[in-house]
Image (tube, rainbow, N blue to C red; front, side, top):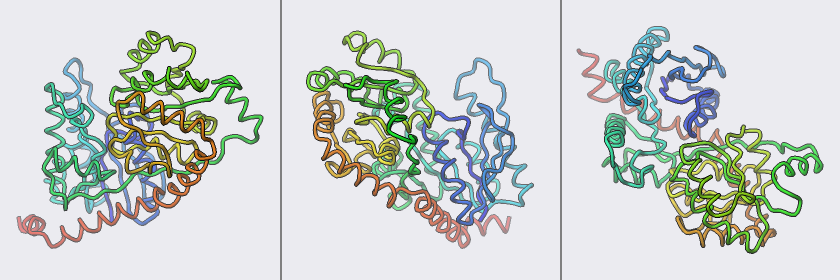
Length: 405
């Protein structure tokens, strides 16, 4: 089977978790016998063409120059370029069996090519605009994105989401039939221990905290829906019982607001904002942290919890979205009430003050990653969707009508 995969993000162009998801999934799909051709705009470097594994190729189309017309205009014009590039790839490869489109940003091109070639399209929806905005579509941009997301789910033969929480959102927000949706989780690799010995680990840890301090860690996009303002509100309650420094790593539009909040609360000496950290630095931080906290208000899946699992770091997460499906309370982590500083402080303190219980959860969590969130399992679930769609398409009246045109 040959699949054309469209995505706005692919390394080195990364914004959220979408691009990394595809980068991890792609070589495993190829190893399982699916030929995948990824088409993405060249927005942040990368070669125009590269082979990442046998049967897995990347093509980057040059986006148009757009000056002063807004992001939606850039997306629409870039989609026209992707359409043209997709047609060239169709000729180069002799056709595709199906299209797999990720999220709304490349929807226009995916639908146009689907209709032109009369082949089926699978859509993966990683998050929704309505969900990110806590259910409120308050401006024209949000409404336009929501409309494109609806069109994507309508035009797709099947819709893949990362959690049952997201499946429910598809039905609620877009009226997508539940029997058209497949929940296929995200996955992670279990990294090797980044430290050669205890001395090396201690030296790294001292870059962030003193020996007498505990270390709490968050990494991810710095946006309102991640609930970091709740984490700061909880911090005096944590400090009252345990000398703990909080490291909030990442970048995003809410970063300055958090820094202002930390200053207002007098937490300058207790909270560190290192900005962007590499994957290697992130893995090191997970390995030296005493707890990782993810107090999201909206979270379609919660890949960060799995990354913490894989690095054997105890986790505290809020009871929201896909996080509730990834973390089992008191078995693989602690779950607290979303938006509650008191509940969040309790979960962090419980983790710090009961290290034996925390370590037992860490062992369970690592087994969970190895058994249920490995990429081979995820690739095979994705291929099962491909095969179902392709077999249904082969006998469909839509295909037959195209043949007789």
